[in-house]
Length: 323
Ligand code: ADE
Image (tube, rainbow, N blue to C red):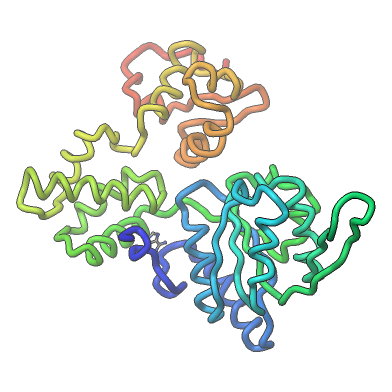
């Protein structure tokens, strides 16, 4: 689909994550010069930063096939075995949300990753016996939003663990300009900057907002995306100037209005907003922490003066913040 064609296919086309690209370029060059497959790799970080895209680009750089699945889909040993036996030397198997692997599947992966061996049971009951099938030397690429939720035997089997970071505003501008070019849309750098600023450091969000702004420009304007058009569109779609959505704002205002700015525990924040704690921790908090709107303390989450200013509380008398 269109989403697929927006993805950069090579690391050279990939904008941002400079440090990661540098590390990967070395790993790729070394493996290629030894004519060996890549070691298993684990990527972690908030959603939408390009973990899948980097994994697919790695396979392309190695001239290998790319197979993609997600841990919750690997319910039975049969599911993971189906992938493993298909893999040729150097192929990349990408498992998203790898912290959610069922135990039986995870245990099959240990010998597969370490010794390229698939342990299977043949027959049932008393006549059942174990046998091993040799596998080709493949590369497992895991992705997770929660590296801490991986068991240590699994984490230890990756040759490298790499974090993806939020993107800088100028990187997001380049991504939006690139997307506009691929989708034949007229945009100026100020229009792209307006979208970038509201994208929470996340390319997936930048591309999504871009499409909504493009709709607006087409219907209400002449199709061109200027700063004014982008700002008006995003205002209409309730994306605030920092990219905060309803839940972000609810989290922050709840901290102020009900808890005097904090500290408040994660479970309380979940109960008050109606989101589950994991979603708050993995999806909402990372960006609020990144932009300095929220702090984590031993006693819970605390709002910051920058967040108060953003929410328009500055005119009021000072709140008894973490005093
Ligand atoms: N589209 C989404 N993420 C991208 C990235 N990191 N570089 C280029 N285009 C992208």
